[in-house]
Length: 348
Image (tube, rainbow, N blue to C red; front, side, top):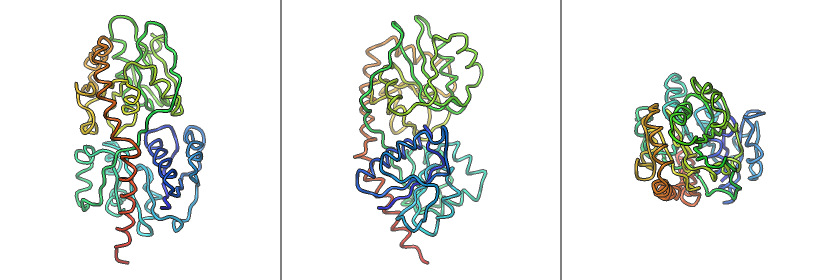
């Protein structure tokens, strides 16, 4: 297939990294891949070199007739997608949860796009049923596909050294209000016993109070790395004892699975998107969104119990098998072929 992917940025975020993994897989399988973006620079172009290394073309202008199907990644690609709907087979690959649904609800024109594309893809079933169902109600069932993202085994890396005698808790994701890293900062400050090092990996877009104040008061306890290339992120995972993502809203984040590949147990907030994959006390610890004392209790429980860490890490690693390219690739290709067939069957 000749596949055109549309994305608004190539920054260090889950949607762009998911697209990168899919582009690598498709190029390895012999497909032609083109990435259409606006002109990018700085942090928005952080992954451009990685995309070019796959052999994909990265362009700012394109002729739609040169491609078999167009796949728009994220809700923020609605404008270029609208220009292609009805002219060629189109797929909307949505990576957003409640925040994305809220964005479309405020823009009826964009909402109508859900009914005009030939296929809609989400990475998790629970977010479709509990967040997007009302907006997808008029679509035939075969127009919506649930396909996990590809999250491959980690590359060989050298673990980042850490201070002697310190446990390390890591969170990976752009730092801003929706991710609620402030809850993790507060929870770490509440932990008893020897200080724990808390590492926040991701572009620092804003940490709400009292996060900045706590970090300034305890600079030896917190590390903010900024945005890192994927290989560097894996080096931090490899040296960590616990992974935590305290978000208020997600669709299907990659980072808990990445941590699980490294045998790092995960602590997550209680979100619908995790229901098909992560279970409290079975392969993760899960806390209510915004409940800092319970988050601190979960962290302390894991840090004080090597046997619990090992048990949850082993169970978490089993989750990773559901995100491999061999499992996901054929499903994704089938969805694209179905979109092509749907478009061909429409009356002209």
